[in-house]
Length: 583
Image (tube, rainbow, N blue to C red; front, side):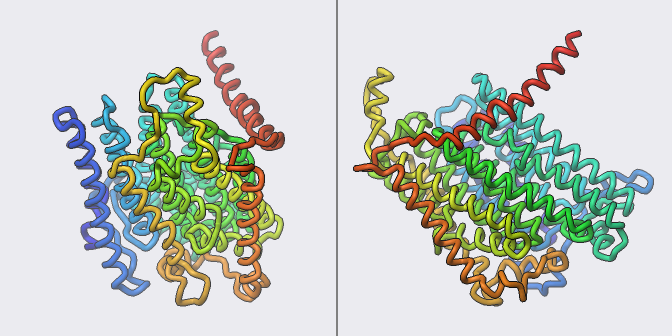
């Protein structure tokens, strides 16, 4: 199976080409079925490659398939080559697996859209680009996919481009990501000048063997971090991601859960030997930016009223946790949280899309309430996603978030405290969302009358194409934690699986106070999560769960600061540039 690695990106690419040529003939729903089948077929191939790798010893889990010589220019020899190893296959599994579920969901969600075929054209191209990113054997092949997902995000976020807000959001995502791309390019230039190759194996081997000076390794790593901040929405380059909600909900799930935003975390993990060879303060910088991003985004999420905006800022916050793990040297914990986050965040986004679909495209949570009775499958699965992200055991998010907090405690107590406060806020704002949407009094009656709506506007459960992915993802959100349980060395499956890739760089906390008292820290994590849930219920549940929005001036202040100062600065610079060009 390892020699068939090329089929993994080739199948979505074939889907893109077929829809490009015959999309109008195929129409709805055949274009969607074709795109879904291609992504699902890619997933089947990935499973076969995974089983092949699993049957080999740890030392043999590294296979390169060279397709052709891409850039034979003097000393710059770059092959179009794909790498199958534990990290790339882990990424490909959830990119294709969750991507297939999102494709199936989109068949129902995009029903009746005049550009139905074009939407699936972009989805298949997006999945192809993401697979090239994670399977690339060298930085340039990865950069091809890196730019591909950037372009596709522009197409998908601004898909409904007749709306000014969607067109603007697409441009904002495209421009912001170019800033990160500059960092990625400079990192490639530095790596080639230092080592003479862009191959991951060549660069990482040189770093691990001490053949790259610490100052050079730090320069490469810092530029990679700039690129990662752009794609993975860290301060200050996070501003594009909340606006990406202007795209159709399947796009939000694809970008925010399984693909594009995890690229930065993947890249830093792939280059972990270079980070390990850098100056020690580099890890502190990455961890600090991650922790501050996590806290900052969580405070903004508390004040949101749009059901998708809450989840958008939640994504920024959870990505901050992953960068906190990387900065703490806990690469396995970062990948573990990436995988569990893909499960529960895809579930939450698709669940929110189901609610929006059932509410006739209403996204304001203040106009919802009591939907669990009318949309029982959506409500039940969304609640599972809520418990997972809130860190309630035994759901998947609890185990991965606890691993990160454990590593942070061993590395930096202040950053651990910031992580704990963020975890508290996460449980708080997600409980708030669940109460406002699925409990309390039904407020959609009043707003339908206020808007002069006619006919039956009672929310209804979504079709099977939309609820089936919800049920599958709910199961994964419950069981996903089994990948890496802290009970013994033998229950840490993901750690053993990734050991050939990150074993040399993974920081060990064995013998530290954190390891000796990990069960105490685990209890603290549970108490924090439960406290956030209880506090939110106490605030938002008055009588029969009647919603009372408290005057959370601090959180509103953060939201205002984000809109006026951060966005305002970007808009001001753009205005000045246009004015200068006009003269």
